[in-house]
Every structure is written in structure tokens, then in C-alpha cells.
Image 1 (cartoon, rainbow, N blue to C red):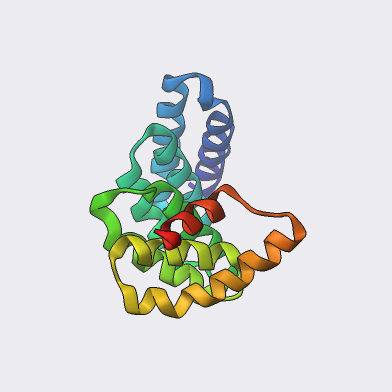
Image 2: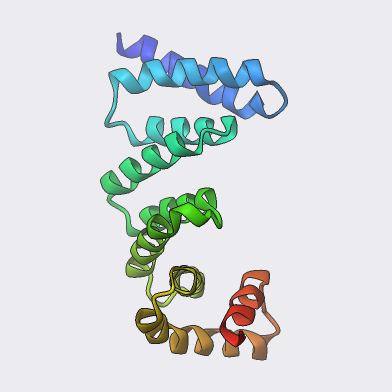
Length: 168
């Protein structure tokens, strides 16, 4: 019943907004969202909520799987870019996932090649992967962006991390 599914989705969203303080609320939100997702697997809003809930629960592999599906189906370049950034945040600096980090950072960069954050994440991923040839191609673009930020007094923590890697 579509009305029952809409109601379950609304309940899941409401519970998700309250779940920060209560694990059982998170589990209930996850149950409702899962039921809706099984019935509406192509619903991007449901998929996004389910990814959020798995992320809150600490289930990074499932959140990553859902975010990958979401990014494949998302039509908007800017929304896909945001999904890739969410994936990179989840992947963090995991040593075992360097190939996946590089893949996701490359996809984000492809969507927004002039975005300084996309360049920074790609340079970091290339640095950590040891791919010197590709890294060298992007470092110049990265340096130009950082120089502009230094002149404007806008240097981020991530910029400092990348600069320290590049100087070593």
C-alpha cells in the first residue's frame, strides 16, 4: 500500500532525526526505512536516508554500498559530487581502501575539476597510493588553488595536510 509506505518513510525520517541520543530509535528508523526500501528500491530519497542510518549505526560498508548505488542513479552532477564526498568521508584514511579512495576521489574530481576540495582529495589519494605520474599532473593545479587561498587568507586543515605530504 503506497500510503502505508509513505507513512513508514515519514516515521523513519522522524525517528532518524531523533536517533542521535537513542540506539533503539535508530534501530526502529532503520527497520521502517528498510521496509520502504525493499518496496521502492529506486527511490533515491529512501536510499539516502538508509545510507545515513547505516552511517549513524557505524555500518560503513553498507552505507558505502548505498551511496555508490545512489551516485550511480543520481542525475544531478552536484548531488553526485556530494555523494562521492560522503563516501570519501566514510572511507577516511583507511589503509586497506586506497584503491577505492582513489577511485571515488577521481570520480569526484571528474565531476568538478576546478573545485579545490576535489583537487585536494585527489592529490591526497594519489599521494597515498604512490602513483607519482598521476600525482604530478594534479599537483600544479592544486598548488595554484592553494596559492590563491593563501593570498586570501583561506587555508584549510586539509590544505596543510596535503602541503606537508608534498613537501616531504
